[in-house]
Amino acid sequence: MNIFPPDARFDFFGKRFYGYAFSVILLLVAAGSLLTKGLDLGLDFTGGVVVELGYPGGADIDAVRATLDERGYENAVAQFFGSSEEVMVRLPPSGESQSRMADELLIALQSESEGVEMRRVEYVGPAVGKELFNAGGLALIVVLAGILVYVGFRFQVRLAGGAILALAHDLVVVLGLVSLLGVRFDLTVLAAFLALAGYSINDTIVVFDRIRENFQKMRKGTEQEVMNASVNQTMSRTVITSGTTFLTALALLIFGGEALYGFSLTLLLGIAIGTFSSIYVASAVSLDMGLKRQDLLKIDDRERLKEVEDNAP
Image 1 (cartoon, one colour):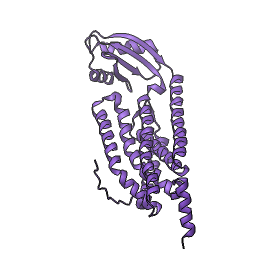
Image 2 (cartoon, rainbow, N blue to C red; image 1 turned 180 degrees about the vertical axis):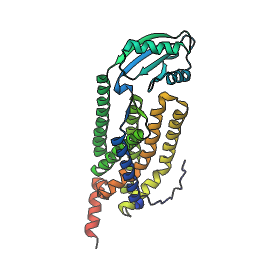
Image 3 (cartoon, one colour; image 1 turned 90 degrees about the vertical axis):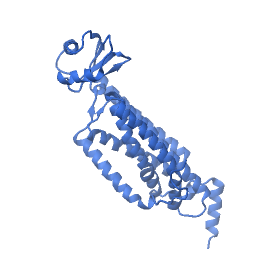
């Protein structure tokens, strides 16, 4: 299904410097937020007390969260654990002992719902959280390196450079927006960043595939004209894919509850930024880095093109 006319000729790359300006603004906002506010690290990275509670008749998770807020448990996280009868509450570290914090929590919840019982108490130290944070950062670096090698072998070094810059752009901008909006950065948000890396590069590779195909098929036209035609041809696919993914993430944001809020919001931001960057960062930067038709031609076609250029008057 094509939602754009097959002969669409939007001049994407003629307006690419407006896209660059928008990207620079996004990067400045993101960097400013990261430098001034930083990230609101969740208990996965800062450590704290994990309390597993049993509700024989099933728990009302919204009521549990309301009780925690009323009793002054700031930044506490409550979510189902396995079934509706099991609730896991995470408390940030404080000066109190682990057992005392758990006992006070149990008393507070028992006053609102009878029959609540404590099943497990566990303390997560800050050293474990730091290790998780470092491991997550290392995972992102490995993803970037793997993508650089893959795109470099599959396409061409200039396209690989554009793809990596676009991916780094997406991750930095979304990370800055997460900081700006005050979203708690935990393991679910980190998982969203890893998913975003895969989504962003997939959209970029679809555009790159069409660019390479058109460089081999379209004998007339400048590099900019061929790349404009390629993006126009893939626009219907991009809008449909991004739109359905966006709606799915939006449904998670609306109906997924607090546990999936950070994950779904990060995906929503990443889908929008990633779709923009696949055109105005990855492809446009590759063009301005000097991408030429012969860079993507097959060896026989490259020799034929050189012969034609040598014989041209």
